[in-house]
Every structure is written in C-alpha cells, then in structure tokens.
Length: 534
Image (cartoon, rainbow, N blue to C red):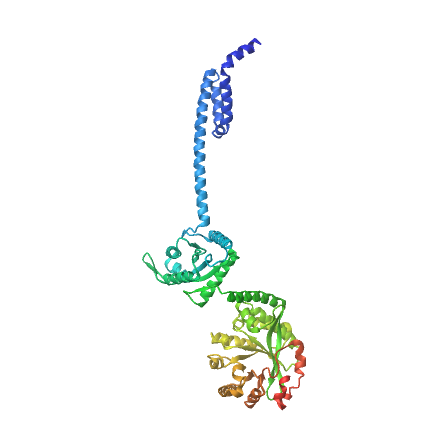
C-alpha cells in the first residue's frame, strides 16, 4: 500500500499530462496513422526508455502543437477542396445549360425556359397582350462551310449568326442553339405576330448577306418556322409545330419562312398514319389484286386482265391507289407490295382460261430494283404460272434515264418468256425514242387521248397516228379509257387490237372474275350502247 501511495504521490502532478497525451493520441490517431508516425514513435520511445516524465511532457506538448498545425492545415485543405468543388459544380451547371460554342442556352435549358413561359401564359390567359411567339431557324448552306473552309470557320460562322439573332430579338427575348446549325428564338410577351414576322424577314435578309470570317467570305442563309404558343400547349407540342412550320418553309425553297399551318399538319399526320397502316397491310396481305378485263375490240372476246391494287382499310374504307401507291414508293414499300400482289394474282389466274394474259404494272422504282428479275422468276416458279401469259407494263419514266440498262433488263425479262408493254404512251417527252431504242412487245395508249375521243378532233389524229406507228413496228396496241360506245366505235374503226375501260367493266375482285368472263361480250358487237350495264 505504501508503495502505491508513493507511486500515486509521484505521478499525481502529471495526471493532466497523461490525460492530454491520451486525448491527443485519440485525435491525432488518423493523421498519425496516415503519416505512419506511430511506428516512428514506438522506435523512438524504445531508444529512449531512460527518459524522465518531464521529457515525456515536452514530447506531449510538441505533439499538441503538431496536432494544431495538422488541424489548421487540414482545415485549409478542406476549404480549398470545397472551393474547387463549388467551382466545378458551377462549371458543370454552365455546361449543362449553355452551349459551349455560342454561349446561349442549349436544348435542355431552353425547354425549361419555354416550359416556364407556357406556365406564365397559362396563368395570364391567352390574351393578345400575353401571347408568346417562337421561331425555329435552320441555316440553309452551313454544311459546305465546314467542308470547304474547315470547322474553325464553321464555328466562327455560328457565333456570328448567334450575335445577329441576339441583336434582333433584344434583351427581353431568348435565343438558344438546339443543334448543329439549328437555333430557336422565343420572343417576349410584348411582341405580336406582325413584329415577329417583320423580325424574321429582317433575319432572313440579314443572314442572306455574306459573313466575313477572317479572310474568308461565308455565304449562308436561313429558313424559319413560326408558331404562336397557346396556354394549353406543352414544350414538345410547341417544338413539334415549329418543326412542321420549318419543314413547310424549306419545302418551298431556301431563305423563306412559314407560319405553322394546322391543315397541312393534319394532312401530314394522316399521311404518317396511313403509311404505318400500309406497312401493316402489306405484311398481312390486305392489299389485294383486282382485275379489269382487256377486250379484243373486233372479236368481242376477253383477251386478258390487268392487275390493279386495291386496299379496303378497316376504318378509312376504300383507299385510292393514287394515295397508297405513292406512299409505298416514298417509304420503300413498293417492292414488297408489288411482289405480294403479283404472287396473289398469279395464283388466282393460274386456274383461269389459258388464253388469258395477265398485265401487271411495274413502277419506276420496281423496274430499277436489281432484285426485279429474280423475284419475278421466283414467283413464276412458286405459283406455276406460265411466263408467256404475263405482260409487264412499264412507263417512260422507268426507262428514260438509262436506255442501255433498260434495254438489258427488258432483254432478260423477255428471255424468261415475259412480254413488255410501254404504258401511258403519248404522255411522256420521249415516247418515240423509247419505241426506237427498246424492244417492247406492245404499247398502251393513255386514256387522256381516248376518253370522249369523238369530241376531240386533235386526239383522233393522235390516236390514229399511234396505231399506224405501232402497226409499222409490229407492236400490239391497247386503247385504255373506253367509256362510251363512241369511244369503242372509233378504236374499232382504226382496227386497234385491244380495248379497256369502264364501258366493259370496272376492276373486280378475284371471286367475281369467273362471272365477269361469262358475260355476253357479243353484245358489244351488236349494240355497244346497250352494253354499258355489263
């Protein structure tokens, strides 16, 4: 006990030092550990085991100063890191909202600004004073600038364009860059339609002038689509309408502007929807072949049938071929549709009278398709339909671009046994050249020369000349557009071999062809006037 009392008396004055040492060790542990100071301290203490406590006290004091220094150092370091973090955050915010080249809002930020403007307009109502207008602009000849002068000149051009837009719209408006060469301007609420239109006119004129970039003179232009914002709009709808207006402006030429046209937009939407339905209809085989008879005008007998595409839409009803054939060409579906219809027609006609031919229209895109001949061969083999009974009708537009290639293709088609006829003869600019240079088997006089021919003296001379020409070239002639007894009488006088038109029959589906073929065609030889009801 006495030993412990002596020990306590000896160490009592140093309790505070021990406690300070302990706390300092706890606080400085992470730092010292990081600096690997404890290993040093262990080695150092082993080397100085004979030190007195006052020396330990001095050591603790030194460690305390080291701790304070470390805390101050770490505090300053953290403040610097915080400042750097804030700067990076601010820079990231700028990059996220502003276009790095021009310094104006980017697409993301502009959508936010436009959304806020729509909300304010909704709160104020669609009054004339609170209406907002938007202009979507696209440079007309910007791509050649990059190609000819490099991207540095292109970038400088975009900056120059931005400056002109900002100068025109003023501080109250908003300019943003949405894409490569696409800008948008949001006019302030004080602008009316007339001011917006005049500002756009000035921009169109201004940007049509040369832009000096260093030693290079750059020529660009701009097209613009204008739209008025409604309080019930959303951002996507406003930009969609502006894009439609821009498309309308560009479709009319360069350096123009156009207001959004709801009627045209609705037509465009209908076209888009019909195209989607058409794609599905072709895949499902809903585009069906119908058949119109081609009659031997002097023998009162059906010589063949022309295949015509028909589409009965489940909602829209009957869709005109003038509509969906053009759409099929525009969206690249004409080949698939043509093959589907021809395959179905060959299957239908295979069991009809072997003397009947099958005429099938081939569009320009189909004729120039490298897969045309292999696909026809495949269909003929698959269906078992004789190639000699198939007549392909092509127009002048299909062959006029390259007579040599057209002649080669026609020759290959004739080699497999298919006949080729020139359709719509007389409506093109080089119909005679087509007959001179290409090996056609027949031609079809366009209906515009035949219908009501008894009242068209000039057409009578033209048709008579065509028949004489064809006879001299040993070509079989078909006159289409026969709608009256007088039309039929005239072509019979000319000894035109075949006739086609509503006087005989309109196109009918496959299930009605048998009944059509059993009609009293002899009545046309006795009294064509009474046969119009056939």
